[in-house]
Length: 159
Image (cartoon, rainbow, N blue to C red; front, side, top):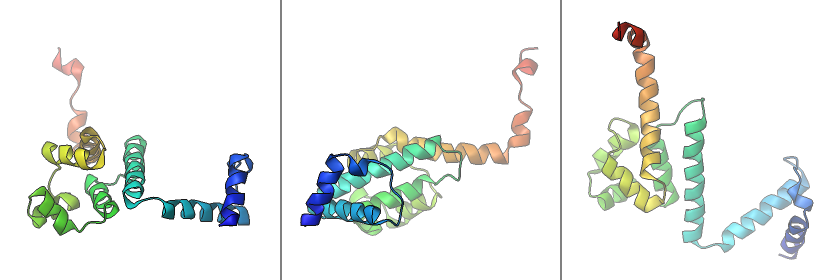
């Protein structure tokens, strides 16, 4: 642990605030320091930190133009982060496990009520859960109906 103190003092002195190459001893030492700090935190704190990371992933997706993850995949990540089984989560929500499974797979929509429950549990805004879902659905509908949608023009409507 004395090595951790040396690394920590380097970090606070600005030595490790510069970019570093992956695979270097400096990088490996930094990873060890981070791991040691994670082990010192409580389970509750680790979950809160992980949930904050999940929120950032969700927000990043809204800005991304790459492959979009369905909202169900973020709910699966949430369930995994809080270290609970899907069946137990479904029981807690007072829904059938098969209904939760359909939400996770994208067969069923996340309801506003479920989004509000997820907000209460995760501290991630209900609107964010719903925006992820809507983003995916809008992309699918646009793609499937591109030709049909192109016929709608304001100029034709107001003639």
